[in-house]
Length: 375
Image (cartoon, rainbow, N blue to C red):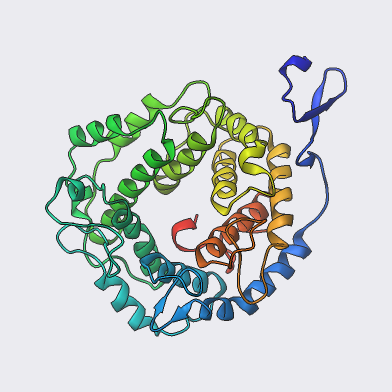
């Protein structure tokens, strides 16, 4: 019945079936973008060394020229170089390994780095609970960058390994799910990834059934997501939180999504929200946080597959056109600010996911996301 059809969907036939989105076009579109994808990859490969070199200054990497050096830009540079198969300008591989491993705190395993990005203090409740968000995120960015170089973090992340189930559940229950689901998903991403690195590189296996069980119990039955819309009707926080949470937990550990069809419904609805997904407002973060959940749920179901492919086709076309010659990509498609390493890494991950959903990029291709956005 038409009352069950979303405002953005055009239906045809009797019984009615969805055939087109007012934003994303025909669901059954047969346009082949594989040639354009190959041409885009060739341009990125050729220009990446120059794009990286523009962000290297005075022995350090920054996100864009003139910005302050931080931990993440060097990690992004390593991951982008691995994606295209080039060297990281300014450093040899042994130098990169020495720099990245030196940034880790041995006592906690967190990565505060040398730039004062956190008010990090070991031995504090904030350290024990992974509440220094930059130091916790840098475990991920540094750890994945080191994997691109063939090794892992020098030390285990002991604050994650030593966390009891009771403490974990207490933290999960206290996270601000009502208004800040993205922040909650980020914490879970940090914790789950730290435990993953501990097991992979240090042989420290932690039983993750406490996290898995809590997540299964707390997922919203209607949306399939975690957290609530804030403000009401705005799925930005739950969708972005779903990406962070499932990237670190479900995708990394091979756990199934409990209700993938419900999640696809929720994410496709959010994908039409002009507040966050219009071309003039879309950011690399927001588009990634739509496309990755559609990819992840699509591994379990063919539900609304043509609509998912329409979303992938739409964004792949626009990302291809967004590349700035010898510079990379800006964070927003409509932005006039400088291209950034973070944005370049994220948009290229989104582009690859779109190409994969459309059937012409594979998980074994040399050009594929590495590091924090690898599959």
